[in-house]
Structures are given as structure tokens and as C-alpha cells.
Image (cartoon, rainbow, N blue to C red):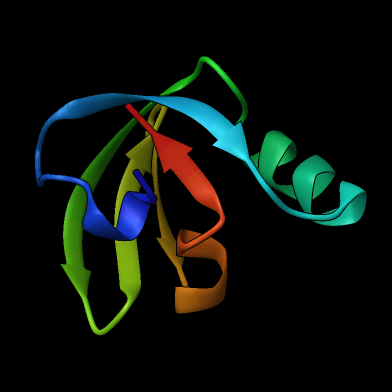
Length: 70
């Protein structure tokens, strides 16, 4: 499921990132890559605030629909 529809405060595993290579590399540098754990802290209006490793990230609607978790 896309991260925008993920439940709050539950550790999830990234299963796929469907974006271009440049965007994938940028997300990987931020800690979002396949098999990494991510937790959605807040979601609203398509934007998502999530915890990745020890930090928090805000993802806009465009990016949050391209990150798939399980």
C-alpha cells in the first residue's frame, strides 16, 4: 500500500519505491530504501510526516504515493 494510506504509529517495511533514479537516490540518502523500517507519525491532505531511523521527514503528496510499505 502507498505510505499515504498506512496506519499511524506502526513500524512498516518499505517494499518498493516507484520513482525515477534521481529521486530514488535522494530518498536512499534520507534513509528511505527497500527493506528499511519507516513509521508514519501524521498523515493529512496527502502529506505524510514519518520517522526514518532517528529523524523525521515530511513527504508531499507526490512522493508519498510512490513509496509502498507492508
